[in-house]
Amino acid sequence: MMMRSTTLLVALCAGVMALGGCVPLMFGGAVTSAMVASDRRTSGTVLEDNGIQIKANARINENLGDRAHINITSYNRQVLITGEAPTQQDKELVEKVVSNVENVRNIVNDVAVMGKSTLTQRSSDVLVSSRVKASLVDAPDMFTNAFKIITERGTTYLMGRVTQREANRATEIITATSGVQKLVRVLEIISEEELARMPSQQNTEASKPAPGK
Image 1 (cartoon, rainbow, N blue to C red):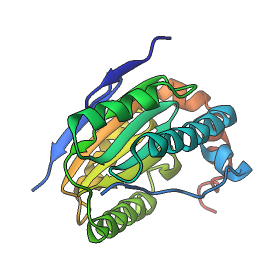
Image 2 (spheres, helix red, strand yellow):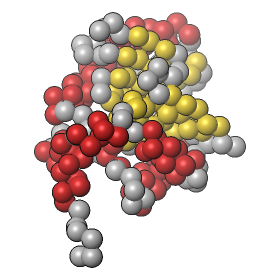
Image 3 (cartoon, one colour):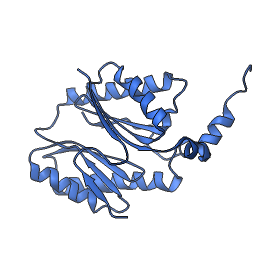
Image 4 (tube, one colour):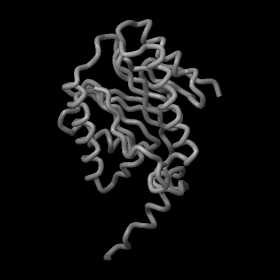
């Protein structure tokens, strides 16, 4: 499949909600069997996504060194690039480098052309991502592991493979979370039927207690 690149939003599902740092909120460093079991990607895709992130970060460091602050997040081989680059040429170089990484199928380049964010801003972004994660965990009708949360300079990015119902519900929760200034959805929308057929979904449903227990 030919890889397509966009400046901000992907074709499958993307939305921006204005409401009024990029540190991906990692749900564990290693790929464990428990993570894979609750993930809506195949175990092979999870490994590919980890590989994409490692390779892309290494190649960006080789080409740009410390003159830019770039973060790579891959979900289902769709890559979100965030952070700051000093020039438009550097922003385009980052995208070119990522496009040459094996297994990448799509790129969303939202790098800002500006000076690098401060450590204070990045710490604030980590806190916002943590609040968003906690808000999703507290919602009984949400499967938190279906989402990946990234916050950059007050903008929260939402990635994952979810139904339209889940996307709408997550939007409602996240936009009400303290510290979120803007929400950008970079989602792959699936049908309720596709969701029901996923082994991870079936395992989750089977583990729930029966009514009245």
